[in-house]
Length: 209
Image (cartoon, rainbow, N blue to C red; front, side):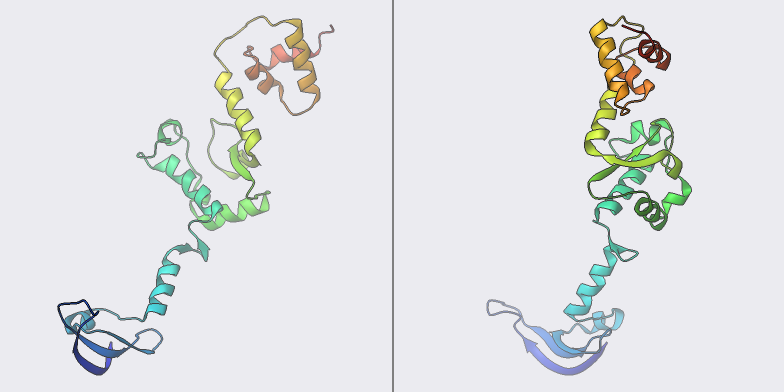
């Protein structure tokens, strides 16, 4: 810190009751001169920068690899890591607590971002694991719509409540129609209708009315 001119004791504001020592100093970063209160001990032990350089410094600290930490993609990445690694996260018990991890490669945000942008990421999509029992890794993740994510969650929630139950002919027709749309796998339909497994759906699909 370089003091250009000592301005002596001054009141910081009109209503101040105590004077402070002021001076014209040189910014350690951009070398511009500006007025500030002078505390010699503080000046000797700290870098003093102007308001503009201080703002730039703060902005840089809130970014990672040139991207804001509050960007949607960065928030998704940090959310995944928190669910898998942070025991204080409210969802840890169904992720990290069950052994779900984020692969080593994705612990680096740049690698995760590169995969996301190369695999269809957009602000309208959300990340989903293809197999909910496996980890967050390239081979097991994809970007899907929020409505599709909600549909899959509903299927998982209903699966296993009942097993080997009988279904009506009306429900059998529904299953056949849904399967023809190619939007459901046999496993998903089995989970949706609380049947024992894909073999039950295969039987229904291949059985004539």
